[in-house]
Length: 519
Image 1 (cartoon, rainbow, N blue to C red):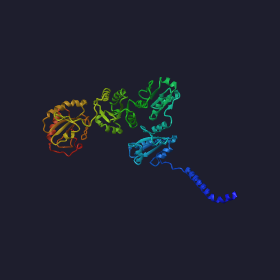
Image 2: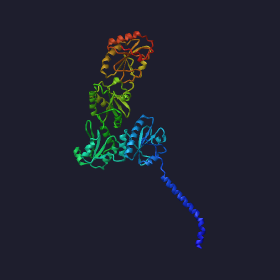
Image 3: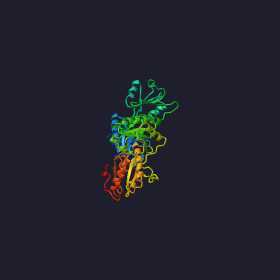
Image 4: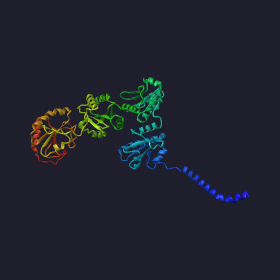
């Protein structure tokens, strides 16, 4: 009876069981398909992942170490860095490094730029194990080799363990500058600081040792960091005093200051190093390396640098190199100014001019010490107009009143463009004062002078100092360039001639270039 009842009920239960089994089987098939389905790879450009809002999170999940370059395609700096970035990506791919390089076009991906606070570009951020909230900043890295080293030190050891004498000798000779940490305890706090510092200075090889024979060979008794260099002083050391702790900031500055020469020549390779040192005061010598006076001048400049290298970075700018044109423009160096010494405080963007006729060790050191003591005055676009500028026989001009005085309708103006510290200018000053007295009561001629080193005048091109120029009355364009003898008699003869040949109301349509009267 029980069997018959079961048989009778079985048809009623079977459909439900079959439906349940069918749904379960379908789900398993769907899950299997989902597991077998692979999303298309994120697009690559020269082995660099191209990221956007839609795939950024996926890239984080799929990459244990992800370095992202936030760039702007119309930025020259972005494109220059991107070219090196792409080279690094190819190298890392060949090395099978776990680090992945990617890029984000901030002009198109504004939400990502806002999320990560990208206000300038290029900016590089390093993401570890998918952590979107706490990326590390990658700064001061500009070449393909540096990117590769930077990533390798983030994904592996940041310093090479030097095992024996042959190993350390080979390592020291491997590059122009190498850093070696001598630590008795390789697991100590100071050693960890050394490793962390190495991660952020990818341009230099870092080695570490606790081998007692190494300590003896290099005359070291306590924990010390040595820079071995193939120039100037071949070995520079930083010994960690007993009871003190090594800090990353102090060690970084020590290494970056001492990896530079006493005088660093400015170029595309060294520019980054100069600004990464951590010293805000930079002294620049603008000089032509092909000139006969260069060697002596450079030696004097270098000698001054030896006593000030921890306070001021000394830089040489070769004015004969066309690529340095922008530097000359920024510091407003004209050909007539060379050689010239300028100092800039990069933090405050304030410039200073060395007021000396010659580049000597004494002049450079005096200028630098005056700056460090706060006695040097910043370079100005215009001096303040003296209250008595118009009361003396020789009128004083500055940038703010120059055009108004020289380009007037009623009087012609004869101007001395001078540098107060120039010996040639000093010789002519007394004669100029005599000339001013002689024409003090003239109705149509004014004698004036301007310190061209302290005032920037756009309306006149000054080729040298002292320079003498005559501005005829009634013309706002014509300039007569005086090139004759610099004597009182010659000046008077010139003025008498010019005063009689031009009437006050006579105007000229000629330009400066068209009327360069060479006398």
